[in-house]
Length: 270
Figure 1: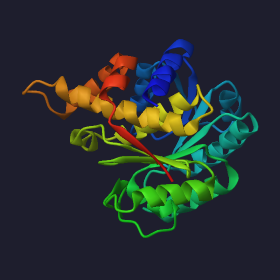
Figure 2: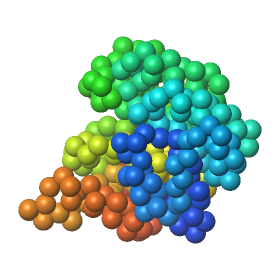
Figure 3: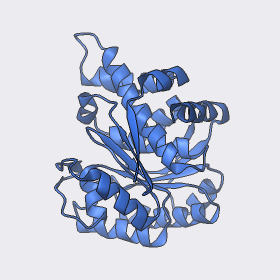
Figure 4: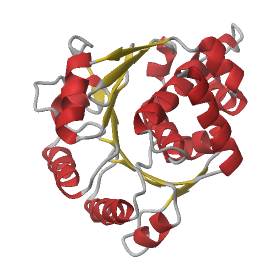
């Protein structure tokens, strides 16, 4: 698997895929920069009158509901349907799905009208989509990882897509296979947008393969390794601001050798 992920990284850098985002304005800049750093080309277009045209020339579509509003909901659905028609992978980041009625309704509507290739969220968000009790504080998760492998597997089978749960341990499942990743650093949870950036990385990797399970692993693994590299690069005087910039630097510097030597993952057959 590590060698396959290394090849995906090389393919991204070689092909410079266009990744269309309809995302939130809190992390849009970070998501754009992380795509550039890994080797892709981001575009953040969300107007209803251009999303179909834009997604038609993209290699993947990332939908993120972090700063949801009524104007972009219609754009998300329109772009998602167009991507489906063109067999372009669509990735959903259901930020704070259970925090408000609008978010819950929107995600349900998106799931009804758009076929998603991958859904990436924290434990609380994935539990909410699965119809389980969850403990969401705003857009943050207070849930533990207990039972996360079973939840990911069951939801992946139900929705016929890859489910990726990020946290202290990352869980990725397509319903038949599940991978557990234990890369990363606790400081990643102290920076806003690292989850959103992980979703953008997943979208970028999904643009160069039809194996969306592998693409999900590649995106989350890359962020985890970059978090470790970023922390290792800090001086004693450095703090969260420097760490944030170092994440992007580390993604930009990430090599196939890093993937092969630093990956800490385990795959299980369901």
